Length: 66
Image (cartoon, rainbow, N blue to C red; front, side, top):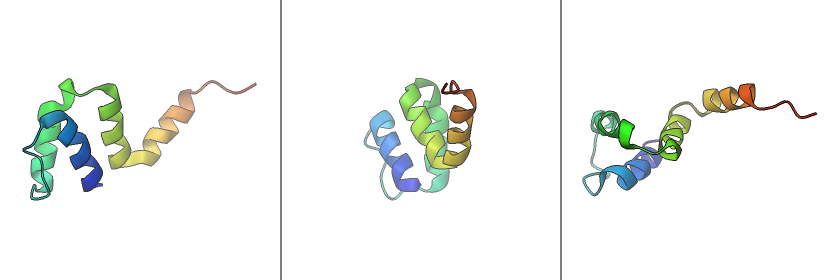
Protein backbone atom coordinates (compact mmCIF):
# COMPACT_ATOMS: atom_id res chain seq x y z
CA UNK A 1 0.00 0.00 0.00
CA UNK A 2 2.76 2.45 0.93
CA UNK A 3 4.33 2.18 -2.55
CA UNK A 4 1.06 2.97 -4.33
CA UNK A 5 0.34 5.91 -2.04
CA UNK A 6 3.88 7.22 -2.60
CA UNK A 7 3.30 7.03 -6.36
CA UNK A 8 0.10 9.08 -6.05
CA UNK A 9 1.89 11.58 -3.82
CA UNK A 10 4.80 11.90 -6.26
CA UNK A 11 2.32 13.07 -8.86
CA UNK A 12 0.72 15.61 -6.54
CA UNK A 13 3.31 16.90 -4.07
CA UNK A 14 6.53 16.69 -6.04
CA UNK A 15 10.01 15.42 -5.38
CA UNK A 16 10.00 15.60 -1.56
CA UNK A 17 8.29 12.20 -1.54
CA UNK A 18 10.64 9.24 -1.35
CA UNK A 19 11.24 5.84 0.14
CA UNK A 20 12.55 7.31 3.41
CA UNK A 21 9.27 8.91 4.46
CA UNK A 22 7.47 7.46 7.45
CA UNK A 23 3.81 6.54 7.31
CA UNK A 24 3.07 9.60 9.47
CA UNK A 25 4.79 11.85 6.92
CA UNK A 26 2.84 10.25 4.07
CA UNK A 27 -0.45 10.75 5.91
CA UNK A 28 0.45 14.37 6.66
CA UNK A 29 1.17 14.94 2.95
CA UNK A 30 -2.15 13.38 2.00
CA UNK A 31 -4.02 15.57 4.48
CA UNK A 32 -2.26 18.69 3.20
CA UNK A 33 -2.94 17.91 -0.46
CA UNK A 34 -6.34 16.20 -0.35
CA UNK A 35 -8.37 19.21 -1.54
CA UNK A 36 -6.04 19.82 -4.49
CA UNK A 37 -6.06 16.18 -5.63
CA UNK A 38 -8.12 15.11 -8.63
CA UNK A 39 -11.01 12.71 -8.12
CA UNK A 40 -8.90 9.98 -9.72
CA UNK A 41 -6.03 10.56 -7.26
CA UNK A 42 -8.43 10.52 -4.32
CA UNK A 43 -9.99 7.28 -5.57
CA UNK A 44 -6.53 5.70 -5.93
CA UNK A 45 -5.73 6.55 -2.31
CA UNK A 46 -9.11 5.30 -1.10
CA UNK A 47 -8.65 2.03 -3.01
CA UNK A 48 -5.25 1.54 -1.37
CA UNK A 49 -6.66 2.12 2.09
CA UNK A 50 -9.89 0.13 1.83
CA UNK A 51 -10.46 -1.18 -1.67
CA UNK A 52 -13.19 -3.62 -0.77
CA UNK A 53 -15.39 -0.94 0.82
CA UNK A 54 -14.87 1.38 -2.17
CA UNK A 55 -15.86 -1.33 -4.64
CA UNK A 56 -18.91 -2.25 -2.54
CA UNK A 57 -20.04 1.40 -2.51
CA UNK A 58 -19.64 1.63 -6.30
CA UNK A 59 -21.61 -1.56 -6.83
CA UNK A 60 -24.35 -0.35 -4.46
CA UNK A 61 -25.04 2.74 -6.57
CA UNK A 62 -24.50 1.18 -9.99
CA UNK A 63 -27.61 0.82 -12.17
CA UNK A 64 -29.14 -2.64 -12.06
CA UNK A 65 -28.51 -4.36 -15.42
CA UNK A 66 -31.82 -5.28 -16.97
